[in-house]
Length: 148
Image (cartoon, rainbow, N blue to C red; front, top):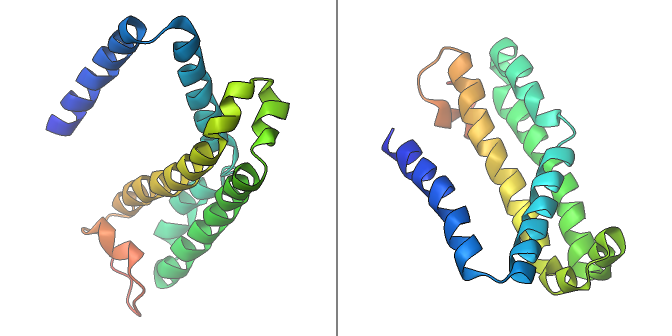
């Protein structure tokens, strides 16, 4: 509960601080960069990660394989986006028409990769809790006996 309270406080305070500290152009670039990241995080998984809610409770013997397959798919799609932004930073300029984003393209590619994979770890914790077995982190371990 404390983490959610701190998160809420940052969610309220950060935009207020950024508006006061950044110029209008810098704030626009910041918002556009996070627009790119959040759009990629919503589009790249293609809803594939949500299959964890269907398969984990039903396929108790194959839970580690299900988690590995979903993680491999997410790593592939977000990794492809990261490689495109790392190899061709001009892609983001072509897509959005903002030359200032070209300098941030490589960093945005890494952020998309890490945040997409990280969001799956949060989702898998929730999916394991819906399967009504105690320790959700044991889903990530490859073992003969599933413990989710």
